[in-house]
Length: 502
Image 1 (cartoon, rainbow, N blue to C red):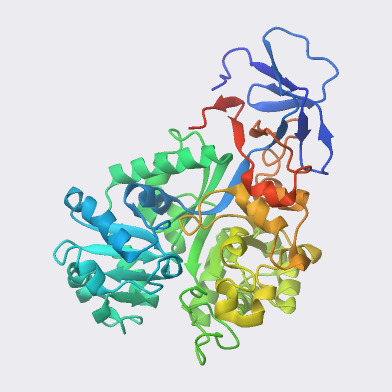
Image 2: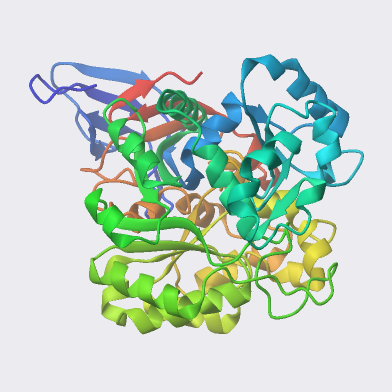
């Protein structure tokens, strides 16, 4: 790390293509002084201690930000059991059996029924075959349902027996509020040393994927305190969001923001995102709203009066409308535009919603990779929504309204991988909603800095900004768009220092 007490190290990267991303033009060189950008295409770089780095035609971009990461859960997924790549229930059972003696409680993430040859949900019987006595708790890929064995059900039954979503508990499946309560119950059993280890796992993956910053969502104030205590140890920057409706808890933490993935509705995968018309594959079901208008308006009012930026999860159009109805009642437009509230996901907005979003200065925090994994006429969106898949994540339409979009992964749901998100935005299954490369890059660079009120010193490579940058062998503006996801980050500089990519 450069020191303020000694002479600043100056580094010139030359003979390449350097994109600041303000206007899409490129430069041939960039001069870094200490932790900041000194100049683009400097006419002179004389002086002691100037390090020269020949880019040999490589591309320099601002380092990325992932704007929606369930921070500790992402690391825990790597430390515990990650089922995102399994192909059968037998394989899942074998994975747990192989480490059965290593933990008292086994927690798993990212089980996707569509990825296994059995093509079905897990059951209590499936998990009891591994162990009926050691608790096993597994989250569905979307994080809105879970699967339990007999021992896990026995642990949580006294706390959730009267909550919505227990209809299938005898079969080992929890949904809705019951799932949320069980998820919280098992997460709270993770100790602080494990959280510390998880944080380092997230940092490693973030750096590998070219991220200098993570907008980090934490489920409890206690975990937010852990994250704040790690700020001086972590190389990457985190922008913490605490999932709580209790505004005073966040004020005590001295944070300027609140929320993150506080649920207004559920997910398409679990048939719980709130729609106006029924699910294609579940007639009569229009999803659900998790909060009533009174508590939502009261929360928005209290948070905005305290000067907090609010972020909340709303996927379906009925949830988006409830968000807008209540935030508009809680604060005037000038206040909202100043605070820059966020709406997380917003996967199926209506044209009227977008007019209101623009008017209130709301930022849409979206996950382009969802279209890569679930979009198109053969994907999950079509299975759940029918022809409404053509209107999911309408990036180009949103930008045409002058709305700011920021990009994230929703990790642990999909991996931290901004280049995949950029690829997905440029190659949207609906050609009308495709972004150009510059627009897509801004979702993970310039726009996140604005969303975090950091645009004066971060997000670009203008002189005076923090020197956070990545080096790519190939130029995303010139390669075939179908190959954007295959780009590799060769080097990353964070605050003027190159960091190892492991």
